[in-house]
Image (cartoon, rainbow, N blue to C red):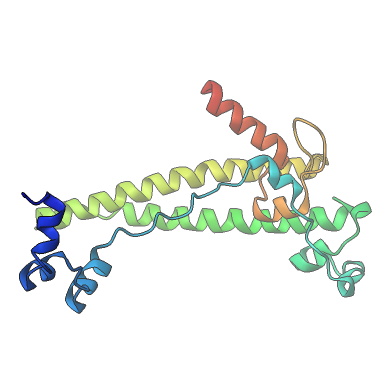
Length: 213
């Protein structure tokens, strides 16, 4: 009587040592483990989230030091520190001392820019033709071009400073051109030439991105 395939396999007995070794799963070697760890794909970083520009208006106001609340009463505006300025009550917004503070800051910035412009003029008067090496001469000319671009930006800033000083004299400084609302001491300290509140500035930038105007 012929044997069935199952019976034949059972009669064959256990697998040979070679077959057993081939079917067994060998543990990875130390070298293989290090290789796998080194070249394994790195985990994907978490998606970066960007703050909504509109949410910047919801930031808590800067906490004023109560110890400095009355310091402004005994000092002139130009002598006030930023901390003392921020500690002043809201009812004193853009009073004479605050206007004096920003007038002094704008005037100092204007003098600094004018001084830098004078130094640039003297530097640009240097004759590059006397430099024998063409590579050195090209480097100097490139530096001059960079200085000219910097001075052009400073020239535009000087114009804004002059306009801000005129706004102080007219009593319009510190208030938004579009809404008439206070721009805020924090924004003016960071950008003394600001003419728009943060919200109005964000709206203008959004329109420029949308319409390219």
